[in-house]
Amino acid sequence: MKILVVGAHGTVGRGVVAELGQRHEVIAAGRNGADVTLDLADPSSVRSALAPLGQLDAIVSAAGQVGWAPLLDLTPEQWAFSVANKLMGQVHLALVGQQFLRDGGSITLTSGVLVDQPVPCGAAASLANGGIEAFVRAAAIELPRGIRINAVSPGVLQESMGDLGPFFRGFEPVPAARVALGYSRSVEGAETGKVYAVQ
Amino acid sequence: MKILVVGAHGTVGRGVVAELGQRHEVIAAGRNGADVTLDLADPSSVRSALAPLGQLDAIVSAAGQVGWAPLLDLTPEQWAFSVANKLMGQVHLALVGQQFLRDGGSITLTSGVLVDQPVPCGAAASLANGGIEAFVRAAAIELPRGIRINAVSPGVLQESMGDLGPFFRGFEPVPAARVALGYSRSVEGAETGKVYAVQ
Image (cartoon, rainbow over all chains, first blue to last red; front, side):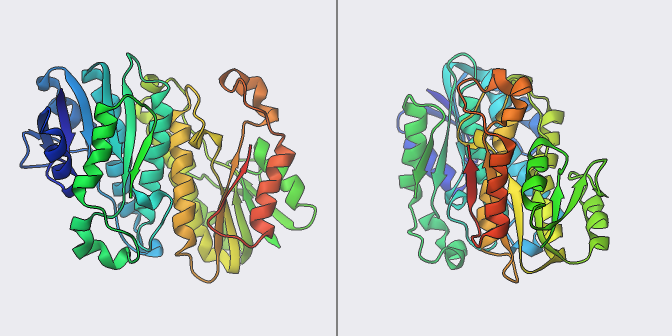
């Protein structure tokens, strides 16, 4: 398969590339330093980046940033940034990207454990992740040509515990290599409208 | 209690006013024709509307519009409208509104059945509702002064089946008077971070 991985150089993305790259052609996309440069928050950059690639078998998003601050300190700009990036950035990637997928191709987005298990400072992340999971279930019943869509909901990454550990005390960290299995299951499986929790 | 009901003249809002108005002072707010005029998509109008009311015991949002179209026909404008109204409009109402609540006051937002049970044309509604439910769980652990926050997730309203029936075949319609019990449970109960499904 020819698989576009957006956010390929992030912690999750590197795990996904390592897992799927064993069996498939992976095109790495991201804000910089990748095969393909695109900004998830800018739908026109997504279209420009995808058009020259030819038909894809799968699109994986391991990308999407959010603001991180105590609830009452999150600024309107941080809320807007979170919505434009992790939430609507991934939605637009799916809606633009499906045009470049073969019949029966797949889209895999990323949500996260904070949908159901919130932590202080994570309200914008929770909101974005909750929107993504509901979007995936909804898009699955309407995407044309047998195109599938799922989400992976990772727990806190073992590799991120240096920065995020204080926010995630008591959460069991998950290695990126294990999180990558969720993406494998979505891309190489046959289900649609699912959320694969790897937590 | 002194309770602000935003969207008081909508189908759900009228049910909420009828239920809570039996026991409490209800201030009806909405885009027009209400005691208080505000536009959920405009945070400054929310602040201006709430400031003169004095301290409130509860804020209920039975408001929030979304775009409604087949997935691939939803325009960027419809997505932005949905996010600004039902999703971030309710979030901003909560964040602005909490400042006007007494200690131990409550906020109740509205999600909907489409979070988990999508229908064609409802992807923007699903996304907004999913974001709201995750936000409520997250905000509940950070709101100060004992302020509670919950959501009510109504099924399709019996009173709306004339317009929405074709989209909701097989769904059991719920009378607004029964949906209103979810808001009563949130406002007059003691839980926080919950989603009351009345479906």
